[in-house]
Length: 614
Image 1 (cartoon, helix red, strand yellow):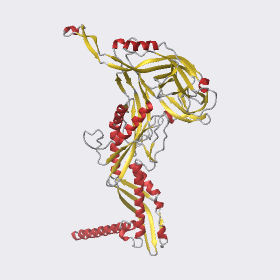
Image 2 (tube, rainbow, N blue to C red):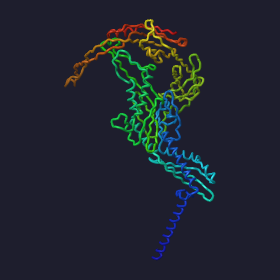
Image 3 (spheres, rainbow, N blue to C red):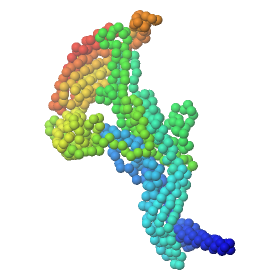
């Protein structure tokens, strides 16, 4: 029995060895057929296969370049246009190259993210290679007697920090005379920092979404280069031009954004402390889309009125101008992450958003689909909109619909008519905007289909001529036209025109002249009741405690010296048939002390104006 089992074990061992040899032979056979051992490719066919691998490498390199320049995308997400209300689209046009925003604000004021995941990038790059396989041409080899056939490609891409690997499955038959070969599996390794650059870009994006460091720099720019809040000692109004403020803020944002860096001295203001190894650059251009709003304003003018020169405030003994303006500011920043050694750059844009002088709220920075508010996505009520001027001539206008604080862009009229689907809403507003007309706003319910006629008032731009005591004047003046639609303010004589439409206005003119009287320093006493110390305070007993308040001396260099008020209904025919609005006002004496200054303000309230159209 012992000899039997020994012989049996010997036979089993022989069978195992034979099986191993067979499996190894089959594996070697398929590895040779699959092209793993390229040394088995006949020398006559080697140039053809080398040319094919070179073409694959070129395709991968091209796809990487496109992906790095387009924020990780080859196939761009669906384009979403901006609007007049929010000029951002879903893509930043950088030197003619569309780059999808990773974070932006849509045309209907909805915050959205579109950050690609690494798996999405791998799939897009694989599809890109598959689609370009047919561009691998062998024309020069056909003339040499080669027969080359390609099968259906199936590509897989693997992105790591330092390389990109392509695994391609595709039958490639090559034959020349007696030499022939079939290669089914092809592999290409590309040295590229695409993965590492993408990881650093995600790290920067996550830091921006968590810390809002770009918004914090934007707030600093706003407070340094625009009037936000403060107090100035003066008895005349402070006036700013919104267009000048915008230009100065844009210049500041552009230059200061370029100065930002990913690393540097610890105390360097422009060091963003990103914690990435690559070079980082931040780019902004004032020619890109901007959203810039200031409140309160009168047209394009910001005005802060003085306190202390009004009737009844003589006890102050000085004048001051407090101001507080609220800004909404939105602009793009393009972030470039570069590796100097490989000379690769990955770039992606984000929108910087300031609302009410403060940064927006942080968002979840994880890659996500576009987020929609819902209202504007479901337009299922058909509405016909007709837009006319006051003479019933048709007007082409931009139409939008506002409901519960959400504004949806509907479209533009053609020949004064628009037939379009609206979102369903009770007591929403149809808004019409056209160049040369006042904005129109109509309450309209869209729970069912219907039609609406919109009448828009034409705006006429007319020159202003100010006369003081019958003489043409170039003195500094603030001219305000106030109606139920708002107000328009002219800083005369820098501005000498105004855009008006038909309506009831209160016209006000305040003329200011140079003065040179000094308000001396004063000390006033203010008393308040404070709790008594000890047990008395516990039972609610108080005592009077007084404080001295010192007011500094103040030189009054500009004072009210003329003007008045007038209620006036302006007809469209008066505007249409004239070129100039003549306003006549009376002068007041130049004050030499605070009492005379306050007396001028009292007299001003009763002064009337003469208004003429010519």
